[in-house]
Image 1 (tube, helix red, strand yellow):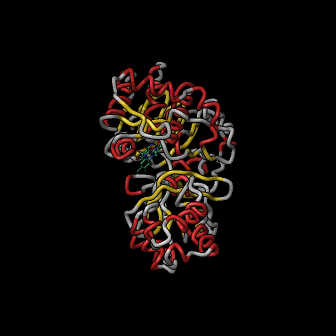
Image 2 (cartoon, helix red, strand yellow; image 1 turned 120 degrees about the horizontal axis):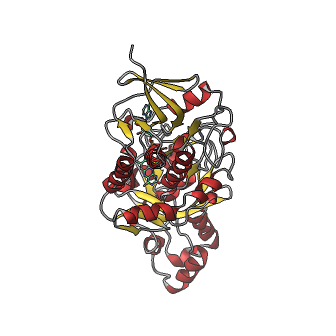
Image 3 (cartoon, protein in one colour; image 1 turned 120 degrees about the vertical axis):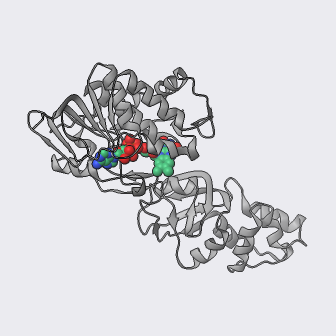
Length: 395
Ligand code: FDA
């Protein structure tokens, strides 16, 4: 029997976090093996940001991440910052732009980010093995890694970088969570995040015909709110404002939607009651919102009087409908549509500086596999870069 191929560091999962960890460790002189069961490295990077990869956010800060321990991500985010990643992008001559809210995208293609990471891995002579599914890991003196395609490998350090459960058809697995439990590390509750929300009953009847229509909104859940675009879908609501709030929403809770943010609607309607008294309500509302949306509200039971006949009580009802729209989603669209997985390997198990397990020396976990989840807008890749870099410095 041939002896297993031996490395200093074995990383499982060639996504954003695994690639960053690999290039960092290899450029320190470590012999690095990177195992990936997919046909290509960085598959989610390639489809991200509509093919342009929203690779970081200028405003990345710990308050924009969810975790049972909101302080955990601070150390990694400050050791390898968005500015460090931007410097790497600039070193490779990749042109980029800020789209909105600090979100940085490639001018060209997400392929440039993957090519950059692979070039940095090549500079460190990382041994990347694609189409190598890891089925089992154990620890004796060293870590022993089993892959049916590649046989066995051994390494001094092992990094779990297999991400979360989102988009199973792209190869997402629960491998990191399973291996964590195997090594007696706790895993927090898992649920889909940055995910479209479903409607039922009257809400669905209103929303379904409006599928494809977007509007500026504030979506609030408890004390948290986001002002961005919302989008009707044939199942309910999506769009950035809804994806953001979905990470804070729990089954059964109501969202409050303001479809006319920043507008004093009551004052405006009272003004139009004087100045446009012959106009129908729907004409006035159509100047503020997409016409189809207004028609659907009227068909859904909103009266359509002439402005002159509009009572204060009706104005209050319209305000309730449009600025304090109480929507109880019937559920989320699940991991098939979720951009991320909330929860993961419990941060209490890991060093916030190095991502190394406190219980199992030499075992590391990084990226989405860990219970740290960012907002929409480049935050999740920044977490992958930061946590990957920290583990790469130590493993
Ligand atoms: P990631 O999932 O990227 O990588 C894990 C790798 O492990 C995969 O390649 C998988 O195939 C492999 N693997 C799993 N099990 C294995 C096993 N048993 N053996 C071997 N390999 C295994 N974020 C952001 O900041 N900006 C953006 O623009 C977007 N856009 C976006 C679009 C879409 C459609 C999605 C689904 C997600 C985003 N995201 C995003 C989120 C972002 O893609 C995500 O947070 C990171 O990719 C997480 O990086 P990881 O390396 O942790 O996991």
